[in-house]
Amino acid sequence: MSAVTLSVAGQLTRGVVRQANAAPTDSPQDDQQTDTVTETPIETLRRRYAEGELDDETFERRLNQLIETEDLEQRTAERERELA
Image: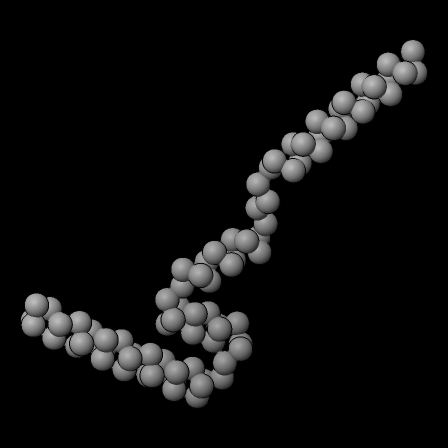
C-alpha cells in the first residue's frame, strides 16, 4: 500500500510542478515595468517629480527642454510633409 501512496504523491507533485512552470509570472514589478516602457518622456518626468526624485528647479528645466524638443520635432515633421 505504501508504494501506491508514494506513486500517487509523486504524480501529484509532478503535476503541481508542471502547472507552476507553465503559469505566467505576473507580478506588480512586471506591470510597473510595462507602464514605464510605454510612458512618454513627459509622463516619466512627471512621475519622477511626484515620487520626489526631482526638485522643482530640475523638473521645470527638464520639462522646458522636452517641450522645446517636441516643438522642434513637430516643425520638422510638418516641413517634411509639405515637401512630400
